[in-house]
Length: 548
Image 1: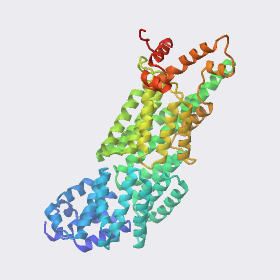
Image 2: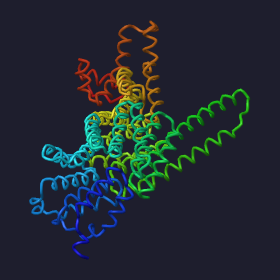
Image 3: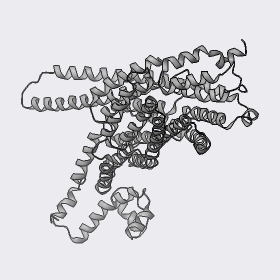
Image 4: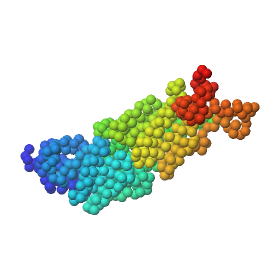
C-alpha cells in the first residue's frame, strides 16, 4: 500500500468535519470506510494524525465502530511524538483521550482531558473543537448527577455551534439540555426543547440522536405514568438505533427502560387482581357468585408482561456486557431485582441488588449505588413485615433497612438527582413506619422532604409508595391500646405506681431496641441506673436480668 493512500489530507479532514456538523452521518461513515487503510496502517508521525484521531473520536461517539478503535489509535502516540505536536493538534489528541475515558465511565479522567482543552480556549480559534469539549464535559457531569453545572456546559457548547451556523450540531446538544431540564423538574421545557431538536434533525440520517430524542420522550412519559406512550417511544428509539448498529449500546438502554415500564404495568395489574380477589371474597360471604374470567385474563397478561420484561433484560445485559458498561449493566441488575422482589424471591432480588452496588462502586457511580441500596431497603422491609429470618435477633432486618435508606440518602445527596433523593426519603419514611420502628415523627419529616423534592411529580412507580407513606403519617403510627386507654383516663384499679411500672415496661424495651440493645445507652438517654434498665427489661422478657 502506497504512502499516498495513507495520507491524511486537509481536504479529507475538512470533509469529515463538514459531514459531522451537518449530521450527514451515512456519508461521513462511508468516507471513513473508503479510507480504511488509515485505520489499519496508522502512522502517528504523519501530518494531521492527531487531528484525525480527534475527528475519529467524534465519529466513533456517534456510532462508527467501537471506542476500542480510538484507544488503539491514540496509544500509538508516544511521549516523544506528543512533545513535537503543534498545540492545535495536541488539543485534538486530548479530546480523543477524553472520549475514550468517557466511554469507559472514567468520568474524572475524561473531565481532566476536556478541562485541558477548555483551559486553552484563548490559544485556539477552533470553535468546533471547543463546542464539542463543552458538550462532552456536560455529558460527563450528567453521568455524575451534577445537573446544574452540566447544563451550563451543554448550553455553552450549543451556543458555540450556533455561532458557527451549525444548527444540526446544536440540535444534538439540545437533547442533553432537555434531559437536564427534565431532571430539574421542568418537563414542559424539556419537551419543548426535544420537539425543536427533532424538527432540526428530522431530515438528517442521524439515527442515534433521533433515537435519543424518542428515548427521552419515553422516559418523560414513563415518569408521568403514561406507560403505553412510553412503550411506543422506546420501541421507536430501538428501531432508530438499529438503523445505525444492530447492537448499539443505546438499544440496551431502551430495552432496559421497556422492561421497567412493563414491570410498572404488571404492578398495576397485580393491584387490580388483588382488588378483584377481595371483592370476590366479600361477595362469597354474601352468597353472590362472581365470574372469574376477568381474573384469568389479568393473570395471563401479568405473566406475559413479566416474561417480556425478562427477555428484554436478557438482551440488554448481553449488549452492555459487550461494551463493559457498568452503569447500564447495573441498571439491568436492578430491574432483575425488582422483578424478583415482585415475585417474593427475596434472595434472588438481594443478589441482584448487591451486584448492581458493586458495579456502581467500581466506577464511583453514586446514582447506581443509591438505587441499589434502595432496593436492599425494600427487600429488608419485606422481611420485617413477613418476619423472615432469624427470630433470635429481633430488629435485625429493620436496622438493615434503616441503614440502607440512610446510605441511599447520603449517596443521592452527592448528586443533584432530585427524584432519586425523594425516593430515598420515601423509603426512609416507610422504614420508620414498619412494625419494628413505628416512628411517625421521623416518618413525617421524611415525607415532607420527599414532597418538597418531588415538586408535584414523583419517581417512577413510587406514587403509591408516597401515598402509602402519607396515610401512615396521617394515622400517626400504631398506638398501644394500653396507652390509648390511659390517655382517655381509663386506668382500671391500678395505682399510680403500678401505672408507672407498666409504662416503663412498655417504653424501655422500645428505647433499648432503638439504641442498639445497649443498656448503657438507654440508661444515659433516660437518666436512670443500668441496673434498673436491666431489671425492667427482664420483667418485660427482653433479656435475662443479672443476679442482684
